[in-house]
Length: 339
Ligand code: NAD
Ligand code: GLY
Image 1 (cartoon, rainbow, N blue to C red):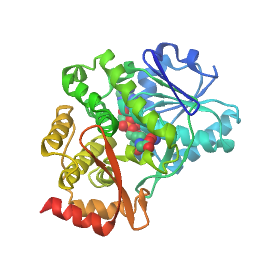
Image 2 (cartoon, rainbow, N blue to C red):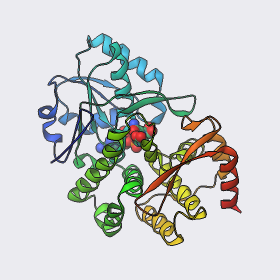
Image 3 (cartoon, protein in one colour):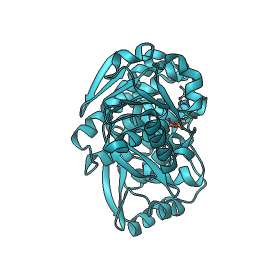
């Protein structure tokens, strides 16, 4: 088992699901999960009060936070209660936000059970809910005490949700680790076979990349923005095409790579390798939605800065840069791409 620390969070990667309690700071956590994860893994849960929320992005709302708050009051939770989110990114984002505001904040931790939540959503301290169709508009930065990432959970993930996690892994590799990108290319068969040792390595490497970035810029004033590679377009695609987050990120990474090609930051061969790898991992790489429409949506996204936004652009494979571009410049750029 590997241990990574980040701003007071202990992140364990490896076999730990069998002994969840041993790794928690509190042996009587209040568990937040959903009916599907509960039905699959109830046997692993500590004897605990369990709050079940609805399954899926549609439940990442203030109504769900209100429901959790009501249940916490019924249970008699106080500021010292330890809240444990067990589930995918939706459960982690919602449980982290509920814990951050219940009685002005109680300690919390996560057992992420999707690949995407293990490599991204459970790490780094961002939590929150959607509002009015826009992603993560309400939330907080607050670090979990402990995150337990066990590849065992990934054996029961449906194929699409399993593939979704690889979009964030490829994203991390493109931001900071060309060797991880190559390792993925060389081990496609192990990825498809859900090989435990392979998964442990790519989960650890992805978390290390994210942890290094977040350690220096927890509140996203600078380099943390790089973690948003592909996300400007992804959030729009997620809404317009009703694609899951990971699949939308995959398309967003491809669009960003094509923009980099146009700006001379990547070669055609590099862009091709990115598109090929994502496709081999079972991910979509294109969208029918016009790029102009995606930009119009991005205007309302929280990632914008006045009349401009920080567009994250790959520079080769293994490095990225943020460019502050006005919407007028962006429109000109995407128009050139579609000519
Ligand atoms: P999800 O939470 O909706 O989970 C996907 C599906 O898998 C759900 O139906 C869930 O019940 C099911 N599931 C969970 N674990 C399972 C298991 N072990 N076996 C079988 N089924 C299982 O989606 P996700 O992709 O995990 O997370 C996406 C969310 O994460 C989005 O809301 C996104 O915005 C958020 N996110 C947050 C951050 C962050 O930094 N906070 C980063 C990336 C993504
Ligand atoms: N998922 C982007 C971030 O955590 O900053």
